Structures are given as structure tokens and as C-alpha cells.
Length: 169
Image (tube, rainbow, N blue to C red; front, side):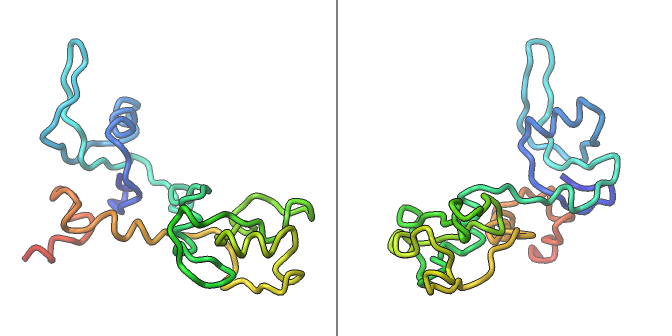
């Protein structure tokens, strides 16, 4: 999905793209070869859509607060012992424990291995003498997005909007 200024904003699924088009909020700039069919109509699946009204970047790029995105933000690394782990060996840790008034948000949740999380217990990093690798904060982007769209995975319709066309030459 592009902003009205043709800047890439995000990837949306085909259902969301069609809903936005039916609501008159977007123009379809390119289609896939596939179609979606109802009882009486057939629609080509949108590949590139552009919003009719400009939206501010901050409103569209807020990253969802969830376990997977915290692991991505922290590079699957325990923020106490600085070792990388598979997700099955990671936990989420409240930097300021709930028992001490800590909240469940980007600034108070970090990635920890099971051993460090248990060692820290219901104490702050200072109380446990376990300094954090880096300050926990809301990310503006996630590393996975870099790899999600590239010249191998993106449909060719996207290249002109993502500046990938020069890589094909």
C-alpha cells in the first residue's frame, strides 16, 4: 500500500486491499494474475494500491506490541547475558516487575533467557545487579521488514515503488 504521495507504507493482504477499494479509500495501480470471485462477479487481486488521502507516517507505521516483535527488536538475544537463543528458550521479562508497578509496554518488556529471568526474579535489573544490554523502547522499524521485501520476493509490479528496478539491470 502506497501513500497518496506514492511512498510505500506497508504490506496489506488482498482482503484488506479490496475492502479499502470498495470503501473508495484507495486506487488500484496494479493487479496480480489471480482473481477472487463472488457469486456474480470476479475481481482481479490488487498488487499495488494507493491511498487517495495522504496519511502521516507515524499513524501507519506503529509496530504491534507482541512477543514476536519484542524478540525481533531484541534480535532474539537475552538482554542480560547477551546470548542469542531460539524462541523456545526465550521469555519476556518485566524490567520493572508488576509487583513494583511495572507496566506491560515496549519500554518495560525485554527479552530474557529462562535462566536470567529466573535469576532476576521480581527485582529490577539494578536490584539484581544485572544490567541490561540496551534500553527497551518502542521500535520505529523491525529488522524482519528488511528481508520481507526484496528483489527475489517482491512482485515485479512493486519494483518501481521500492527502487528495486535498478537491481534487475
